[in-house]
Image (cartoon, rainbow, N blue to C red; front, top):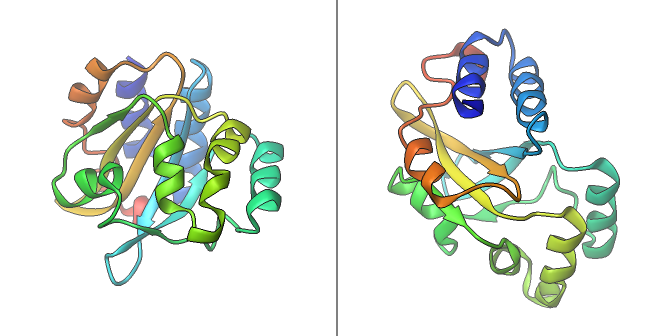
Length: 168
């Protein structure tokens, strides 16, 4: 039900910012966080566009790693949890984000992965492709303790922000 409401809100939003605020607000009501990651021009990296994580936790993670989340680029090819939604257009369900955080962190700070995941309180995650006019432009990620893998199958059929100019 919440995913249906989120998809509807994405189609009705007048701007990207309104879109994310509406969707993250709806998901927050049921204890879920979310993020929108957009493909860079080379189509090889994801760049965080909107993140609904707790701002204090996000700042603590940035201070710990020295990485600003708005300029951080995450490789698609080497991370299955990103490659599958982007390249194969498949939803991915993850029980834990620690391994993914470790894969995206630079080599000298990979050992901080579990601390970063713990700070951000990233529990279970579902990643789905963000598609506009049948073109993948990024990734929509939903995080929450109560997510189930069964939701992942349903989420893969959603085309968030489909044909919506505000998401471009």
